[in-house]
Image (cartoon, rainbow, N blue to C red; front, top):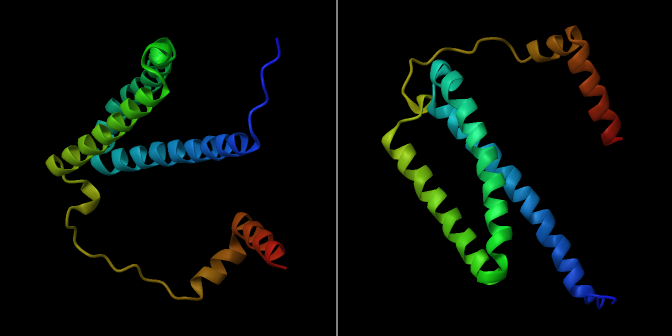
Amino acid sequence: MCRPKAPRWLDRNFWIYVVFHALFNLLLVSLLWALMADLFNIAESKRLFPAIAVGGTLGALAGSACAACVAHWLGHYTLLLIAAALLEASGWTTRIVTWTRIPRSLQPTAPEPIGGHWLGGITGLGRSPYLLGIAMFVRKLCH
């Protein structure tokens, strides 16, 4: 038996949601690792980052498997409410973690002069083939 074709507006909204979801997940993962880099020093990072990465991967697998199992019992709207509640809980957890532990990037340090001259960037550009290639690529994009 053939399934009825979905209305055009539903198809468009579905793809808007898929793109938004992908970009939102990319942003969240990037922000998580940036926060972790600010919170932990090198020794703590070497110890904790693998566990955080494994936990995130296993959590993603278990979460999607659980959602697939209970979707027909709870319904889509209830699953969206649960996902929103979990997202809110993760925001509050992040806030509590940052309140209890001052990121090392925010700890006061003695100011150090940067030094250099504004022409130093141009001379550095001429000395690095990598930077010169990027500059040529950007120039080609602009013209």
